[in-house]
Length: 39
Image (cartoon, rainbow, N blue to C red; front, side, top):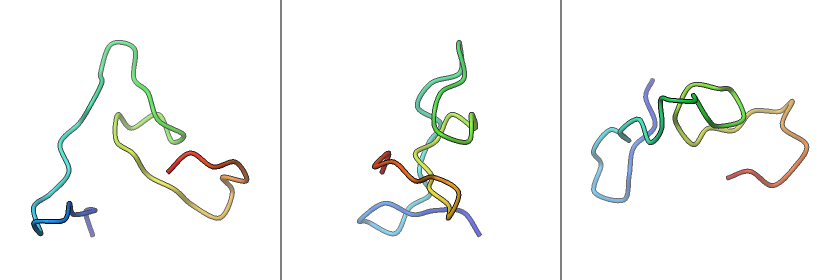
């Protein structure tokens, strides 16, 4: 399932070069292994 914005639309990739985000997917995602406050 893709993550959605407040309008119910899929979140776009925000950065690809270099790939960013905790999961290095280019999107703002979180998971149980992310013990910081990244989202």
